[in-house]
Length: 115
Image 1 (cartoon, rainbow, N blue to C red):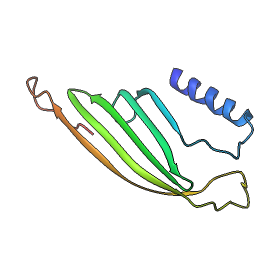
Image 2 (image 1 turned 90 degrees about the vertical axis):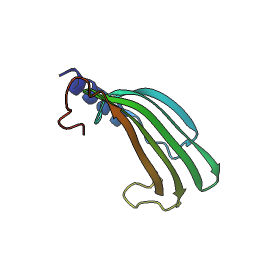
Image 3 (image 1 turned 180 degrees about the vertical axis):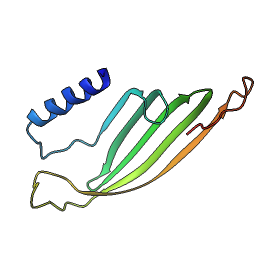
Image 4 (image 1 turned 60 degrees about the horizontal axis):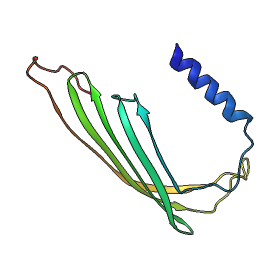
């Protein structure tokens, strides 16, 4: 219930904010995720050329007795193509690699389904 309320509050606040044409690609952030597993994450991106953005995310997640690391690395190419119905949007092509690694505490018995 609380997650739904928070999500609806954020969504309604975002719809009230006017769209900005100048997107800032240089950022670093941290937080807590509960998608697939739950745990802290850190991520960021940097625009290293006019049309190129390097991005990376790392999270240490847990689900049941399993702990796993999630690493996401990617590069985005900003195409400069504008959509007719949303001229303030930026389109880009994204390529990247995801990596999952981890372990499970099997001293308590077998884990049925980690993911």
